Image (cartoon, rainbow, N blue to C red; front, side):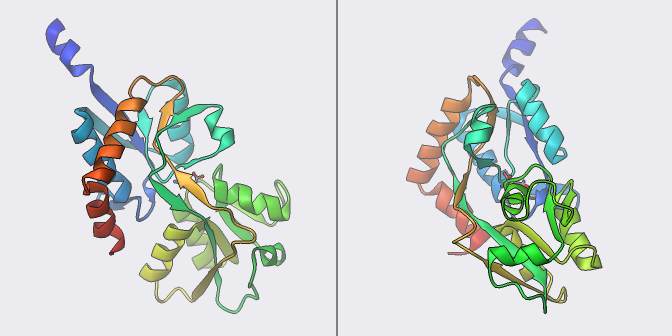
Length: 232
Ligand code: GLN
């Protein structure tokens, strides 16, 4: 039994947050998405077993920080702030932000969200981008635990707009043809950012994942997974 415990020690605890379609979301009760497929391929390449748990955004971050989890993947942006607290893999996806808003609102630039009530997900780079425009904790910013809840509030009219990552916005608009929403991005306002796999500071497995990611990019597996989720 001792020996078994030893060999099991390479089973990694992986966390995700499933409110982030198409990167991580629930389909018939199962967590699926681009990130989930990529992570699975990385695990196979790096030779790890893993256990995937779906948790909330903030508890995901807390569990990685404490080292309770070995890594997390959920469209997590690497930024200078987070790099103080976490280690990240090499980048695996480029992203920016979009504004999804009720049709008829006069929104043609990032600055225009000053005139409406905006929903964001707490503790995300989208929330930061909005706070840069409206001011920190501005009364017109409504914060939600998940992106899914922010979109539900747009639907119900509690907010006029939602700012989130561009691909997630695209997916929402494509999947909700009756939602009566429009969207824009604004390169003047919203910067480009990169997703990385998040590890506790000092992670001993991080380098294995960087190497595995490089291999998957070189051998075409990354492109295969990309095509599966995003087309050509
Ligand atoms: N990319 C955004 C961030 O890291 C949002 C991620 C998410 O909601 N899963 O802040």
